[in-house]
Length: 258
Image (cartoon, rainbow, N blue to C red; front, side):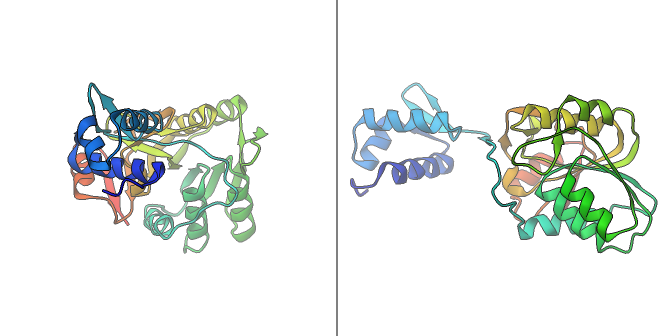
């Protein structure tokens, strides 16, 4: 190994090696990268703080899940995977359904696909302002917006008033976005208030559908909003691995791959 590797490159390489081999000793990594054990221990400490590995006595092991954190979006990222997932989700919607739509780019992609569908008579409940405006401008659907305080940097309202306002409704299907999904921890998101609103959505819906890119699987965020098998459908993309599919098959969830 080139002993001139920069620290960040070395740490990225350490994560890759540990994920491949499941565990490594400090002495092995020090020899591999031609650095001191102290340097490796510092690397491992930083990587553990970032939620990328788990340190052990004298070494490091692969972390079963990755830690996901929240950043304020400058531009909302709409990937091909999101749109394929959204197209698959629209096929679950029936004429005259009452839908609750969560916030987030996956849900916005769903809204875009929904307005181009042949469905004519739907009722929409949401706290995402962009989604509400888009649907009301492009369709004749009935749109109900829950009021609250606009969260700075985001296109939706939040706060305890939102969760309380949702409690008075009953819907056929809820479309949820998720920041992270872990087979043991469930669905989670970095923001506490957002998690509480998502939880309120699950409580008022008969059928719960989660839109989840495969890159979000085996991750955990700060606050759980639904248990692993609490939702009825999990829709993901074709990049899901066979190992991930096998783990999800053990849950009482309908897995749909777009």
